[in-house]
Image (cartoon, rainbow, N blue to C red):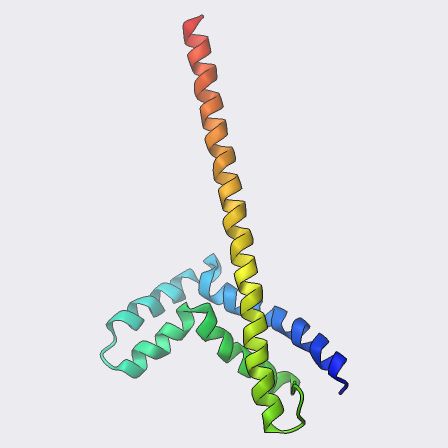
Length: 136
């Protein structure tokens, strides 16, 4: 596979990895299993169990396992056509996926801030309207 094709695959394949990692570790649809994992990551007696459950609460950690699954499904290799290509591809995919996750998190924070500011403005506007109607 040509290097340009490998790079395109890198940036495209990182999208579903980021999406899956973010969804499992942050979104409401997985809240109950995530809360279960959080509890067990803090209270399990063995360090192996604590670390196992922690993986499902950290998007960075979880993205490594999603990447391994994607490499198995796609056979993606970067730069080399042997085990080194899988290794380099795996770490490159994790890196790019986590850049996507970070960008998405920043966008969500900005959207939440904008939404909160709009809600505060609406509340203040309602307050002003009530004050004006009381004074009349």
